[in-house]
Length: 158
Image (tube, rainbow, N blue to C red; front, side, top):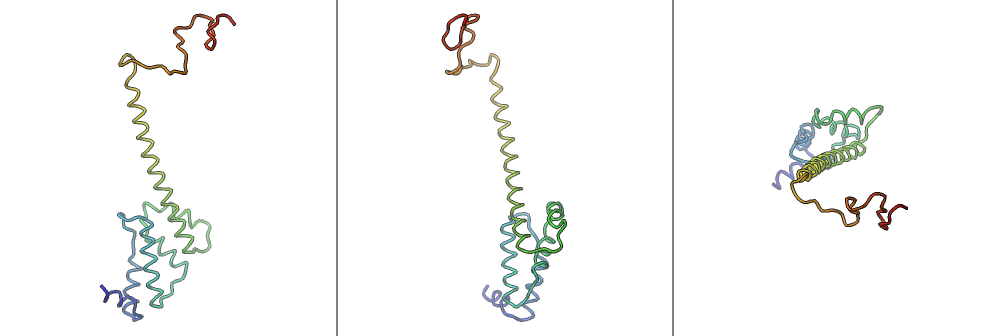
């Protein structure tokens, strides 16, 4: 393990080649989160800087956007680059993490809504003669009131 670390951190042409290969083959895997993906990408960029490989900010951003799954992130990418003359790596990474958080929130809230809907539907099955219904303590029993009787003081005709 130490040999491989030393190999990457030496400034030889071989180590630069290996790190650049990793950079250009870097892809988002479905089983890891965007945050973890960004962490791995940042580590790779740091290793490249340590072996004196300079990558421009826009190239970092473009490489990152290029390795996102096309089907899932096409709309995000097109919306993000629309009207921009250049890209900054920090802006892209921040927007990407924010997009993922919103997407996860949306998925979790849609799952919660379906669960709530099932609970409401299940509650409604106990109606119309399938059990005794209890009345609220704060609500008067309207069946016991006479015509024109006040619900508050129980007097008739005022």
